[in-house]
Every structure is written in structure tokens, then in C-alpha cells.
Image (cartoon, rainbow, N blue to C red; front, side, top):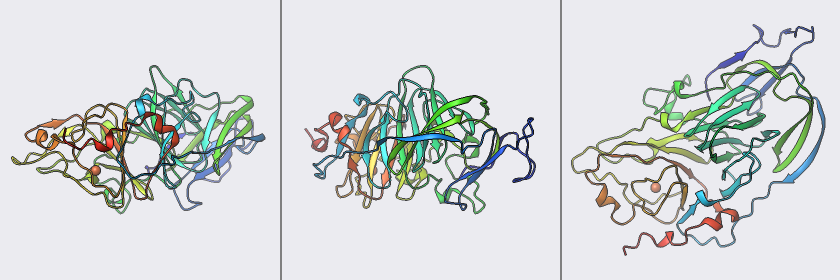
Length: 385
Ligand SMILES: [Fe+2]
């Protein structure tokens, strides 16, 4: 999906002799998706990535879900949700189906291992905090508002920076792509897309580790966490090139599309996966028709469960939500603005809302872990008091 990029040293022709100062060959490694048909990159390691000392099972990934599936509007105060200290293993699941798992993590310590998700692509929305994503492809700085996209199979670690960290993690067994309608037939983002290639930040510093010893990589595959021990540092790459790598894009670089009348949710679309989309709601001018009602009309999101994560405490059509809130408006019940919000929006000039929306085409289930922070008054909050 992203464009061709290269870092470090690579030979002029692929699959040709490329030697280390010692005379030994660098270990060439093709990494990609969808067999040999998707995006890929060629990496050159000092150490062969196949040198495994041993492996063991850590645990099964089990996502317990609620037993009461009564159809209703849901609201969770995720700001109050606890999580483990690890950005990769400490995630608390919130919503899930076979196409996507949405979880939250507030990591407090940098992992002392590397992590590789072998079964899913990840989009990690940085709600709070900053740091560096270390991976085989180099270092990538991240900060509040970034979508950090990590295609499957990449060994990486979040090196936490200063301040509190909070991440919303969207994980999928399909692939994360840009909407096809944003792309030219040659694959370039077109002028009408709300972001462009300049907004995509690939890793920009390659750090080649030469240490040998025992290095742990935790691999998620087949819903099992396995610890694989290598005899060398997993980041021993001297150069790479291709279209497969982790990258970041800021929600603050998403240029909103506005109109004289209310624009529908697809104008906010940012990513596409097989059975869901991810959209960004960013500060923007309101509709400029003199009679416009900027708040959305009631709508039945037929064939879509709508999830909104509120990345600040403003959202034009909602009352009672706060920073860190997450709502689920399931298919089957129409939803719309809270009482008074449509009227209050008339004549307003702009909104400062910041939110990440996930619309899934198949129903979601609530994870048991999220029930402790549920707002049970939300389903009745459209009744005028
Ligand atoms: Fe909606």
C-alpha cells in the first residue's frame, strides 16, 4: 500500500552477491503479504533470521465475551479501563468479531522483548504519548494522533517516551489498505484524497545491532503466543527496500472534506480492510448553506456496527461522552444526534471534534473486560428529560 522506500545499504541488483566485510554473505530475506502476490520488501541481515535457539508456548490468546447480547446502544469509559504494562501483551480487548479486535492499552514500560504478530495487521492509534517504534526496518518516531500501521510478520517494539501512553489497537486478519477510490490506476493517492504520500512516514533511521546472545521474540500465531529465542539481536538489518514496512500517519494530517450541507461518513474514511473501515473525524468548518443543519440526521446503519472512539471531549452530535469514551451503535437500531444537538448545531461555524470511527460490516461482540466501564444509562439517553 505505501510507496517504495529504501534505507541503508543494498546491492544494486536483487538476489546477487552482497558480502559483509568478513566475506560472509549478508542474509537476504523477502518479507511480504499474500504469499508472493502482495506488497513485499527485501531485507539484508548480518545474521540469518532463521537462527532459533528454541521456542516455547507462553499462553493461548483467549478473548472472553459477554453473555448478555441484548441489542442496545453501548458506551464505555475506556479512560477508566485498566491494562497491563506492555504495549503488546497488556492489551485489554473491548470489541471483537472474526474480522477485527479492538483493544486498549496504557503501557507503562518498554518491553524487554520484541513482538511479531504473525496472524494480523495492526493499526495502533496513539491517543496519548510519544516514543519510537523500533523494528527490522529501522526507527520510526510516533506521537499523539498517529496511526501506526504495522503489517503482520514484522518484529518490533514500542520504546515509550515521556508521559502517559494510551493506544487504541485495531487488529485484523485481513490487510489494512487505503480506500480504492482514493487511488489512481497506478496506485498514487489522487488529489481528492484527504491525505497524500507526504503524510506517510516510513522508518527513517536504520540501527543495525551486532549483539549476540539470547534474544526473545514473542510471536502471535494461531491465537497462541510463542516465545522464540534467537542467538542474535533481531534487528540486524543493514539495508532494505520495497513497499512492505511499518509506517505512521497523523490524524492531524487528515484534511477534512466539507460542503454546504452535511457530508456523509465516507468522506472521513481513512483505511479499508476486508470487512470494516476506519474513519477520522477531525476539526473542520461546518456546512455553509444558510439553512444547513450541521449535526447528522438520524440514520440506520444497515449492515454496519458503528464504533466511535472519542479522542477529545467534543463530538457534535453527542452529549455525555468524554475523552476516552467509546460507543457502539449496532446495526438494527437507528441512531442519531442526542436531544437538542441538531438544533444547537444550526449556525455553528466549526467543530473541534477528534474521533476514530470503525464501521464493521458484521456484528461485534463486547469483550467481558469492557463491561466494568460501561455506562448503563446510555441506551436511554435519547429520551428527552
Ligand atoms: Fe452514524
